[in-house]
Length: 318
Ligand code: CP
Image (cartoon, rainbow, N blue to C red):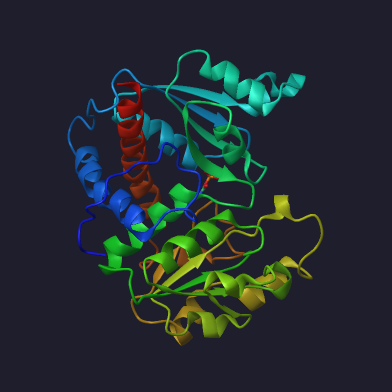
């Protein structure tokens, strides 16, 4: 993990972590610290993407990812345009394919897209010439979230290989869980997933993870606890008896950490947090929480991604 990658980036799109090699993940992560340095300057901007236009096409709500991609593009001197489903011709019945092709006809360079359908960015990548970045496709993947999570872990603990990372909560509906599992296992971490049986996808062991339904087992020996949001908007029925029951069985509290966690355990959450449900207030804001560091690192990680994709696009245009 500490060795710099010698690989050259060749992908036009970033659609998921599953298809990336460990070397490709390392190549992206290698670029992040340079962009963090840029973000710490009095004028946090470089001309790398001057003349490029990046469209944020978001068909699902977002605070962190959309703002982060927009800032990343602006810090690289690209022009940006935001298109949201609720204020576009989607509401008049225009298809995703037509929307994307019309936006592309305005001579843009990249589309960053979030959609509730798994595979929506993969589908679009077959029809348009523009680079596509998956900013979350339903419960499938959220590649830049996994990249910023892995970067944050490495920044805090100095490595990924050999670490014990527990991912806790609503695994079944979580694109963050899937992308994190791919990234962490490819980089040599040992991953445990923990949550109610009803929120655990069948066959998840095939992704190379250990499964437990006992929160104390997930917490003991873990270097990192990545705690997921209960995604009530994706749950079509009740997957556990009550929120109170969920908190009692799977909520991460200061008392649980005091009893079972390693002394310097790193607490992560992709946001938005259901405070008092998956994480207690004091843990969310406590000394081991890196939740806001994740958000800060997200801008530099997305700058690194946009920078690499632009290099491929530049080669294609020349
Ligand atoms: N982590 C994440 O994807 O947050 P948003 O939904 O606010 O973008």
